Amino acid sequence: NLIDWEPVVDKNGKLQAFISPREGYFDSSLTECGPPAILTAKGILLLYNGKNHADKGDPRFNKNTYSAGQVLFDKKDPTKVRARLATPFLRPMEAFEKSGQYVDGTVFIEGLVYFKQQWFLYYGCADSRVGVAVFDPQKPAVQDPLPD
Image (cartoon, rainbow, N blue to C red; front, side, top):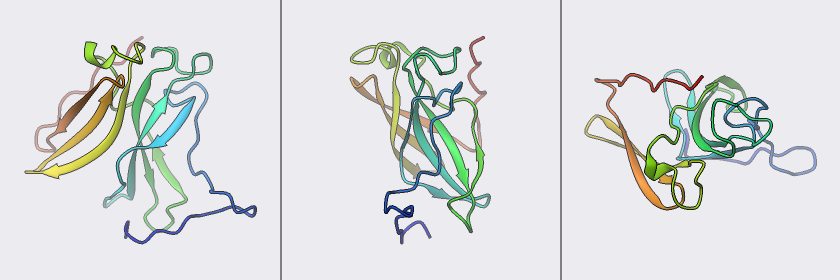
């Protein structure tokens, strides 16, 4: 129900991870939860932050760049991953997302609000500013082209 949670721990009592960094991907160095998960008809959608590893990451993106990913968990068994994006759905492309503390680029998602039939995703920009990305399900935008 996304309200009543109990931690899942291993036999040693440590929190169990259900996604981890993936070598060769935009999230090869770090995976960290973003806003609270959303219950959808297809499963539990979690938006998360990923960091591109300097040596083992996706070479199409700047080294050490923070971008946003999505993972879909099974509704009945939230420990089971049903799908995960191979590329970020939000990545630093604007000058204000590449200035400040992280000049390689950072979008770090934190808050998600559904308001007037649109989704507002609030994110940090290079630890210097706060931005908002707006998604209108009735008018989806064309996805940004990926670098070669």
